[in-house]
Length: 377
Image 1 (cartoon, rainbow, N blue to C red):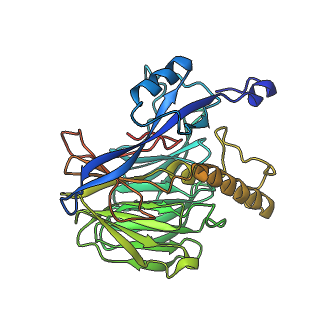
Image 2: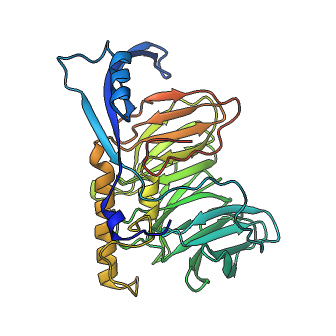
Image 3: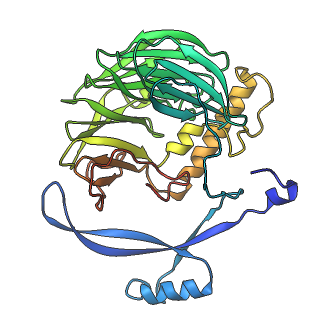
């Protein structure tokens, strides 16, 4: 939405939640044994009446001898209008559109399709910026670097093409895999200010970490027995891959903690192939240093490749990620499978699932966390 003046920026609405911990009994999906675990719920507290209702509903777990912990989170500073109709149509592709992705600042959109082209669009004017040709087959996945200065696309022949999104020109082509590329993810900017490293995953069962500046493969992560269907680069220096072999593998990507590509742990529990992954920090990592207005706080205007801008952007990324971690909750991973279920993990700490989420009557093919990481769909 539009800014309503400096006065409105100073007023930040908050949401309050009461935290209650209770004991629950559940079946361990790995061993089949009954286990008792602590489960924490956060209940929305809007006024005095809702607080009284909370105390009545949880009187077995809350007493006058305990301290009731209230947490709060700032709400969005803009109003979201419901989507009741199509606001615009962007014609151009001559075959099916297979993947779209927004730039970190939200001002540009990129699309890849069956016509073997990558197209960049201006979101504000809904007009095409560049039509990029270089692929020889279907463009299956696209991804922006967190600083918005690089863009990567992967196709059905296993080729990875790096683009300059401001000019619409290719900066390099890499024969990345022997089969088609199923996913890719950039290293978060708070981990590496240069935004040079990218991980690709493929139907050939391998994931590879690339340095996009030198065009060199820094690590090949092998171990899956079938196609890799999804890949994520987390905020704690770990890469996650989900495969048709029903497993999720966690790999080290932080050189300070060991060799890049070293297998950390394998997450098992799904009864069928794993189709999708989502991280609670996806939004923070994807948008990099940009705020909800598409600006970088305290960054000089002008050249984004300048040292001053990059230093300010890196500080903004660190501040954003530290604020995200302020709740103390470890990085959360959710996986979706052909077994009709989702599973919630704390993959940085344990290889055991926290919760199995049921309810779907068909395969789960896509998952996304809300920007504040409190909800997932």
